[in-house]
Image (cartoon, rainbow, N blue to C red; front, side):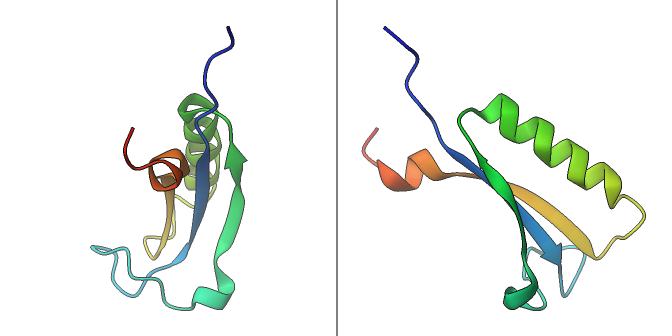
Length: 73
């Protein structure tokens, strides 16, 4: 049996404060992609985060979509 698909979303953008995750302009969020595993999402997150390492006001996150889609599990 194949492993269960666990979807993860990677996105980010400019934040109002580097200590928070409140984004400055929701219309300008960068949707990197949806990935079938945490490992793949983490690789994408690391890549895009590293590309923006010099900008403290830009943050990227990984969202566990599978936890939102099936919260009882």
